[in-house]
Image (cartoon, protein in one colour):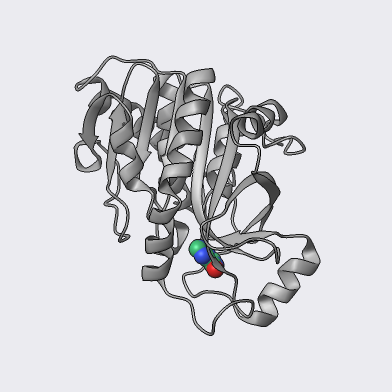
Length: 278
Ligand code: HPA
């Protein structure tokens, strides 16, 4: 934030402070490892344990300069950097009160590490009637209902375009590869909402009418940031519950984390397959 006259101006991720923050984070990581993997993975709520299936040096988030503390249960808070993959076990959510800069810092760090493809995972509520807890949904498109965009503010044209094209945000080739690896994968549109309260049944009816198939509180800012930095993006939602009004009467984070774990084996297989083929 800077102040011009009486107006507070949000300077955005492309200002010098943010660029320096990315560089400081990169320097921290480089003091642990010099690996330059091609694939970056972000593991969402309840999915952190998957990090154990990947090779590399484990770097706690607290050792990465500029990284906020991960506060959400079900998030490990480590980066595992290997020859082929950089796995972020735990992300920063807008609902935790983090700025958009902090939410997308890990993506800028992945890009700075040399990553070319970002695979973003999350826990989501199923809006599509055929989606049940434990299912996986490949994200084919998204709707941003966060009311915020990580690119708001100044732009540095050397980093990415002022007006980013989002018409092919979720890479068609990556989706094809994912479907080859797991032929029963459903595809659908993910809607990101601010949370942290879950939705009302009326909101879910509205989101369904808008074209959403699954609902969650993350991923969209990271996709925007990754596309901005020229990364290819794949998104995978683990359906942890039926969205409000569609299943049993109440939703809880414990249920989200527990169900996330039941889909772990299938998701792990898919992620390992994707990483091997990229
Ligand atoms: N709504 C929003 N976010 C979520 C949900 C949900 O039902 N399940 C997991 N994350």
